[in-house]
Image (cartoon, rainbow, N blue to C red; front, side, top):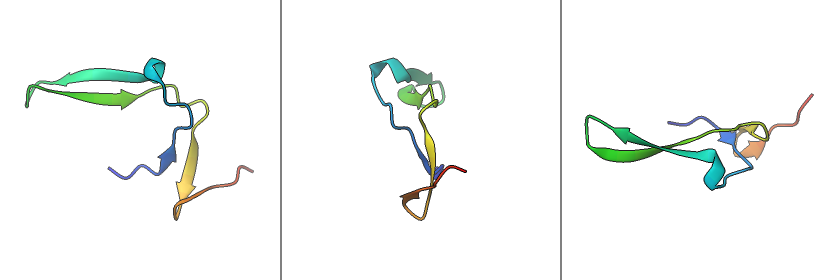
Length: 48
C-alpha cells in the first residue's frame, strides 16, 4: 500500500491491533488522522 500520508501523531492511543483471520496473525491500523498531511514526491504538500 502506498497511501502517501504522513500521520504526525503516532502513539499507543492511535494504533489499533487487529486479528487477521485468514493468517491468524496480528495487524495494525493507524487512527486519528486529525494532524495527518498528504505527501507528494516524498515531500509534505502545502495546504491551501
